Image (tube, rainbow, N blue to C red; front, side, top):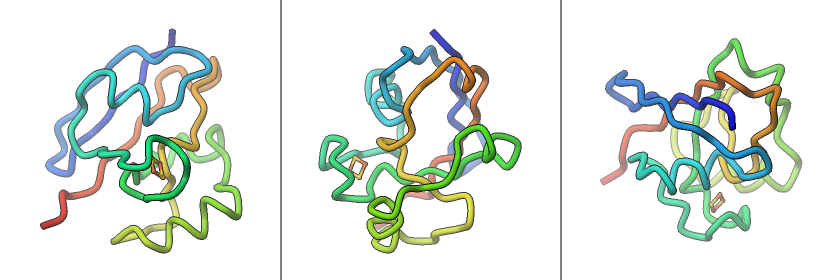
Length: 106
Ligand code: FES
C-alpha cells in the first residue's frame, strides 16, 4: 500500500491508502474522494477523472500517453500537469503522491 493525498479545489487535503497495481482514480472512488467522477470507469474515454499532479511528483508520474492527451482536450481548465487519474497506475515509487482535484463543474 502507498499513501496518496488528494487535495480538493479549496485546498483541503485527504490522505488515503492506495493499492499497488490499482489506479489513482480507483483509489479515489474506493475512498469516496470527491471531485473524481470517472464516468467511463477507467477506459480513458470521459475525462471526468481529471487531476493535477503536484509539481514535485510530475517526474515520478511521467507524461500522459497520446490517447490520454487526446481525451484531456475534453477536460476543462487543463494545465501542463493535468492527467487522467485512471491512467496513473499506483506503484511503490508513488508513495506519498499528491494530486489536486479540479473545481466541480456546473
Ligand atoms: Fe474516464 Fe478516466 S475514468 S477517462
